[in-house]
Amino acid sequence: MFTGIVTAVGTVRAIAPLGGGKDMRLTIATPWPDTASIALGASIACSGCCLTAVELHEDSFAVDASAETLSCTILGSWVPGTRVNLERSLKIGDELGGHIVSGHVDGVGEAVSATVENGSTRWRFQVPRALSRFIAEKGSVAVNGVSLTVNELEGDMFGVNVIPHTAEVTGFGAMKPGDKVNIEIDMLARYVARLAETK
Image (cartoon, rainbow, N blue to C red; front, side, top):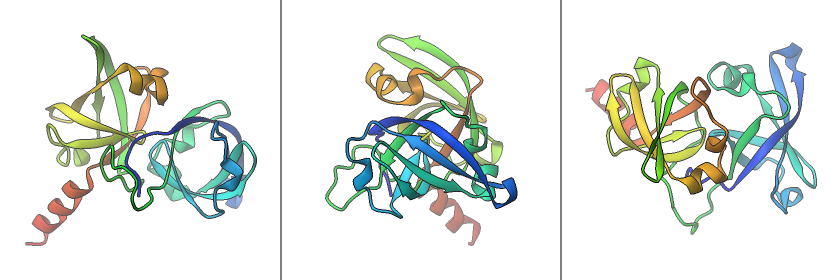
């Protein structure tokens, strides 16, 4: 489990095909000073996708992404040099600064526009219609693993405001309209919808 509060921005250092080229191993360089002390098998959110650390080095770690993960996230488009939002898993007693995030990406959205609004930037994203029904104004959504509040909603588009600090410490600082993003809907919305379907 995570909170959607990104603690570092890493960089894809290397990509190696696995399983006949359908899966891949990603080596991600990180500015964390204690990367080598992360437990083997630990969960790390990589731009919102919960992945398992399978190799640990002084300044990087490696994770394996299955064909299933590659098919429903943006990880398949990553190349060496891609910037990655990173968050280590939540510990009991940690501050919940964002919202409960599972790291299970629900789908891929697209950044449509970025408009300066006073001291922040209003980002608008388009999501698959099947996901838009789970997004609510003033509700929470994770975009590339960043916990954000939905400030507007129209059809399959939603808008969030990103303050300069968030842009500086996440991949939002380099994002541009047209970029694909990992979307995780609010966990509560997912379960409420499931309960309604079974009635």
